[in-house]
Image (tube, rainbow, N blue to C red; front, side):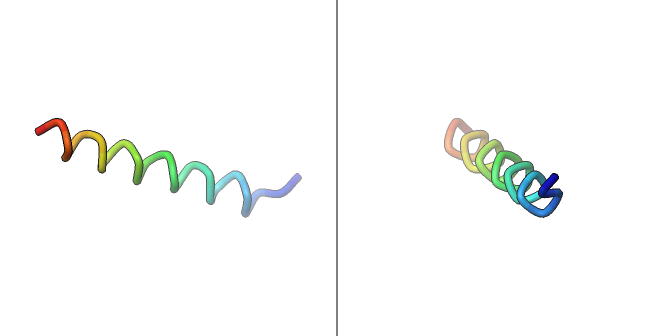
Length: 25
């Protein structure tokens, strides 16, 4: 298993959510 890859993807998702939320507001 590549935990670093999973953690990186999770980080990217969280960052994308923040960006999308900020864009909506």
